[in-house]
Amino acid sequence: MSYGADIVQLSSRRSRQLLKHPLWPFKTRLSMESMAMDHWQTTDGGILAAMGSGALGGGWGAELLVPVKGTEQADSPADG
Image 1 (cartoon, rainbow, N blue to C red):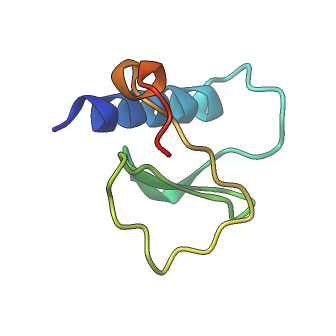
Image 2: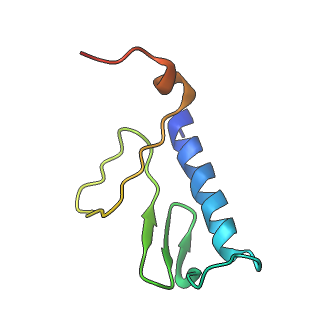
Image 3: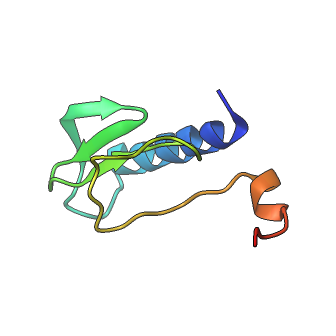
């Protein structure tokens, strides 16, 4: 697994842990129907599909897309 994919997996795991925490202050929780570390759903129908850079995300619509860069990629000069 690449460094970028590791960061994405870690972020996804932390987010899932927040939704499962008993002190989570919102109605939305982690759905019991889909709880894989890299693909999970909320009880309100939200979906998280965690993908590292370069992964093919075709077929997934998004209302919110959050790109997460690894340190090496974030610190590199911009292309172009």
